[in-house]
Each structure stands twice: as C-alpha cells, then as structure tokens.
Length: 501
Image (tube, rainbow, N blue to C red):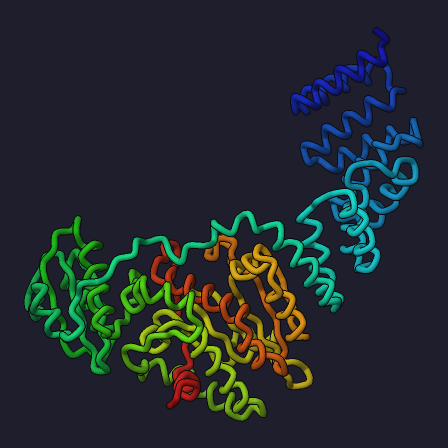
C-alpha cells in the first residue's frame, strides 16, 4: 500500500470516528516531518472547522491552497468557514471558484444563495436557492426562499412555496387534530345558584382570626372575586388589603397544606362555571366557561357560539388606558376598525363575553409597538392572534396567527378551498414563522391581509376555520403558565365600543 493511500485512509478513519483532536495531532506529527503535503494542512483545517475554530481552519486551508491552487475541497471548506464568520464576499469568491472546478459539490448553491442573501443580493439568492431545490428536497431552503419572496414583495410566489411546505406536513395532521389534552367531561355543577351558595355549600365562612393554612375568597365591590391559597392566612390577607381598596368581604376555610393547590383549582373552577368573574390569571380553565361538547360544536359549526356571563367592567383597568382610547378615537379609520374588530371577535372568539380579560384582551395604541405602528392588538394567552398596523398612507394591515390544520386538510382532500382563498383575497400573504412554537406546538401560520380585503377574508370559511381553531387552542392553554405570570393590558373603553349592542 502506497504512503498516499495510507495517509488518505488514516485521515478518513479519524473523520468518520469524529476524532477531530486525534486528527489534528496526527497531522501535526506528519507536518513536522514534511510540511509540503497540502492534504495534511487541508485535513487539519477541516478538523478545526468541525470544532468551529474557523480562524485556525482558514489559516490551515489557505496554506493547503498555496501548495495546491486546484484543491477544490479546500476552496469549498474555506468558503464555508468564511460564511460561518460572516465574511460573505470572501465566501462567495471561494465557493464560486470551487463550483468552477466541480459543480457537483454538496450544497454549493445553498451556501452561495445564503451569502448573497446576507449581502442583500436577493434575486441572485433566489436563483441559487432555486438551483439547489432542483436537486434537494430541502424544506429549510424552501422556507428561506419563501421568506425572500415575501421580503421582495413577490407574494404570489411566496404563497406557492408555503403551500408546498404545507403539503409536506400533511402526514403530521393527526398531531394537530386534538382540540385540547383533557378528557371530555361534563360538569355537574348546578347553574341556578350564586356565589353565596358556593360559599356556604363548600365550607367557607367569614374570615375572623384564623392563623392556619387554607383557601380564601375575596369579594370586590364590582362583583369580581379572587380565590387564593395561603399557608399563613393572616399574612396573605394583609398583603391583599394593601393592594386592593375595593374589598367587601373575605371568606375562608381551613385546608391542610398538601391539598391547597387542588382545592384552589377546584374552587376557581366552581366560580367560573357559575359565571362569576374572578381576578385570578393562573389556574383558570377555559372548559369552565366553554365545555368539551361546546368546543366540538365551535370547531364544526361556523354559526355556533355561546354567550354566558356579562360584559367585563373594572374601574382600575378602564382608567389605565382611557387617554390612549381618546387618542385612538381621533384616527380617521376609527369607525371602520371598530366594525372589523367587532366582526372578528364575534366570529372567532368563543364565548367572548365570559372570556373577556381573563382569556382574551384588547390593546389600544400599545407603547411597546410604537415603532411598528401597531394601533391595536388582540391577545390570547399572550399570543397576538390579531394585530392591526397603520401604513404610511393611513391604510391598515391585519396580521393574524392561525392554525395549519384546515389548510393541511384542504390539501389532503385536494379540494379547491385553498386555491380559492388565494384567488379571492389578492392581498393575502402567508408566512411560516414560528414565533410562538412553544405555545402552538408547531400549529401556526402567519397571515397578513390588507384593510381592503379584511372584511371579505372574514367571510372565507377556510380562513375562519383556521382562526377559530387556533383561538380555541390558545384559550385552552390560558392559565397553565408555569414560568411566568401574564400581565394583561386591556383597553376597556375600546372593548365596550366594539361589543356594544
């Protein structure tokens, strides 16, 4: 066996075993004996590259190229190193040289396309990504090309790419089918009682001088309630008395510490099911106001909704956003946006009266979105399911987060509903960004629609289906937060105007 063949086999063995430290040491020992073998520098550079020590890799591969200017793999590897350290012009030079010598190298057009994207040469990037996609079934590149089409306002082509991407997800449709993760159970709680029934029936009494652990109910002047747990009830209630100035009564019942969370959740469920408003933002459960049977109807019947409870009203919440609302009223599009918000909420938010504030909320000229000119936003579980942006010409753009499932089902059944959606709403733009993947579990598409088309869009069954399903899922996730606590921003005057009558 010749020395060259032995050298190649030894280097290949190190590489296949991912022993890059061993590969570097082996090359070091050989280079000390003979520093004229380009392959040793190239291999050591590749080992540094795999260890993400790109500067060292460039030094070694450059030395290899000095020894052999036609070292194609060296040009390719150095080009990827330059790409990895954001030296895109140098990367393009090396990758194009490598392509000239061997245009069959794996992923050449992808890396060239990516480099051109980062230097702002979008059309060249599209061309190279398209070449790459002729040979590779690469979803990542397809999504990237769709993003560039959207960036360059080639929306029809972007939508075509996104439909292709969705077609690849049809096999996952079962993963998204469930509405929620709980069993279908009907509550046995009577609907004809009231808060006093709950208090007396479940062992609560007026708070006196208790010092033990237990569950408490705070009653406020505006007919809201707060249910909580405390290991030291006196300390906890003193904290609430400092925070709230509208407390009427406090009820309490002793519970051992091990059962506090269970009993707290149970009482919250009882109050929600009795259509009583609570101020708790955690441990609430949407099934308490919209049970499993009603949720199935919501998904299958576009004309179905349930309205229980009464309109939310809280003086502190109202005062907080009063000035912003008065400013918003002066906008030239105010009346139209009220009508569009009204149609959206009544068509796509389940039991929108009982679920207001705790489950969905409506912002007005949000301060943190001033730079993007967002004028109003509806949030469910901190996900902005609908955002409205003011454009430079004072027109509006509506951005929605919706479910993939109806689109996947349409593609699987090969019906015309998806095609019809794209044809009847000319301004519609699709985007597969995963901004809230942790909450949506991958069932998320971004949809952008112009003001001119939004009313018509809310008549489209496919779009409405995707909005209703997404909103319902987010409602079911509300109250399950573990790592953070939601801070609700709700413009009550705007909500009153939208839902009046």
